[in-house]
Image (cartoon, rainbow, N blue to C red; front, side, top):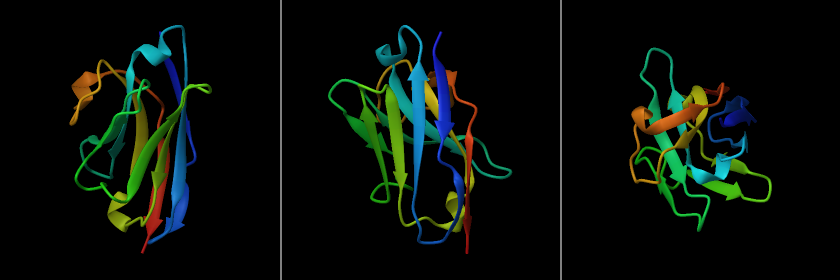
Length: 124
């Protein structure tokens, strides 16, 4: 069993920045790759970024590449998502997920565990 707890969401103006954190716990937490997904109002949950614990190989959705950065601190079993140059369309609940494997474009079916989500709201 893996537990994921997100934090760091909030309200920010367009062009601003936030850093989200996802603390992973459980005996086999670092056996999984980690990903961030988001779900905007009235939309389906979509992939944002993914990273491997070992080596830090990372991938991004086209919509966030160059603006968002995923990273990890293996000593703390924590994954981060730095959100820069935020746009109103980035408004969503952001979810951390433990993925069965690292891959370029995972979908929600590749997630084995989910966090509870953290709200990011970007005002125009």
